[in-house]
Length: 151
Image 1: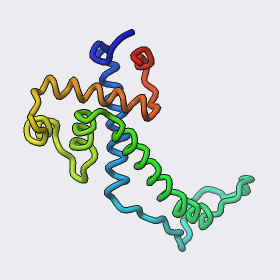
Image 2: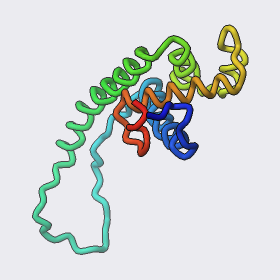
Image 3: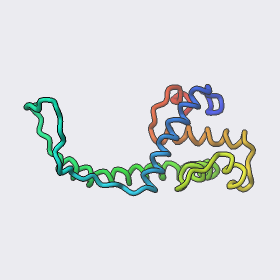
Image 4: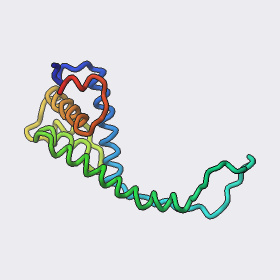
């Protein structure tokens, strides 16, 4: 059984990329307002023949479903991320929340030099951060090759 610290660099990079993608989506959905879609009232011109395709398109219905379902989906997603982060050990939770869960992006060196008390060395910071990322990947059911051997 391997530990998180002994994972190959390519697996660590894949973990970091996928978890950071989810955390970036969290930040966007949490701190930016939802823009409702509206139906277009003007017809679009096309030079292709519009024949019967066998499908029915209800633009207004599709927009109404999106406008009612999407905010709830986003809220559930954000709550799921927050629950996963809150289950992390104290130091990992602090690093992830300071780095990724604030309204404005903050660089890693600011977190380990200025925000953490006491400050951490860069090596220790990335070791803790990598462990937190792997735990989050498992908690969020993110599929990563080579991670199933760790836990």
